[in-house]
Image (cartoon, rainbow, N blue to C red; front, side, top):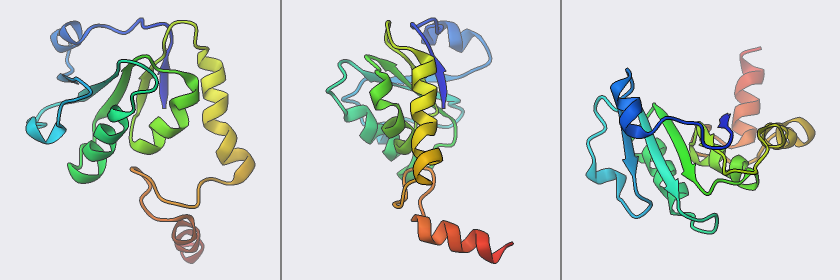
Length: 140
């Protein structure tokens, strides 16, 4: 997951002037109501850290709608949320001011390194761990 510290990211309007086609969705918007053809980046907004509707939007975009582009978290994004964001399908996060990107990167790698990964599937790796492990052993 790419982490962007202290909101230095371009606005959606500026990004659209570049080569990316960006769709910004409010956290109460239904992604199924929008055309995703030609969209490179979907920005999902967290108005406050305790509002998790963007997690559902990201999961819906990845699993149900098959969106393969960048899903960017904006708004009040804390490093505590990064691992769950990644599992829900986010690929980028614009951290709130005061959040340390280095701490976020360590947290993202901690579970996989120390615990061997998650048992259950998620928005990106849908198979449970036992299926992923047995499939990789069969190909070895």
